[in-house]
Length: 181
Image (cartoon, rainbow, N blue to C red):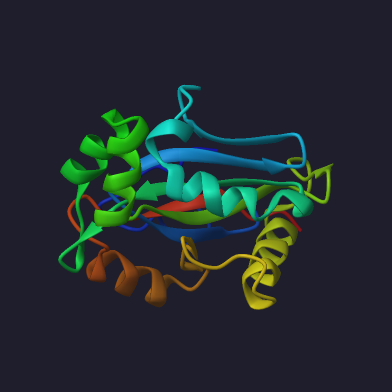
């Protein structure tokens, strides 16, 4: 599900079961596939970004035994901020130029969902269950840089603070998903 940016938080009770809020960083939506037979960084439109982001591809290769599919936002930090322009430049590079760009300006995947784990599709599982699985992957160090966990909260006060803090230009707080019990 694509997050929708809101200038203000939706009203209490906007959806049955409640909402979870996440920051929406200024990057590219991406899916990372990491299995024993396949490693790929794919754009939301289906384009293969793997050649442009060899640093993420290498990190995904290290996860092949986990058989994961991760959903997140591809970002490039520069001078303490997320830099969308640098992300766009990285996306156009291939070969040696992409390898050098990865060294100079590494990319990260701000991960907000796990769609598959241990070969099992999780899309029909409730959001809370997928989120717990994702948090466990970070807690047990299966996932580490360049993967980072997107902050998420069901608390409206915390969501308002996340919205104000921002991750860089374009950051907003977005309802991620209705909660399923």
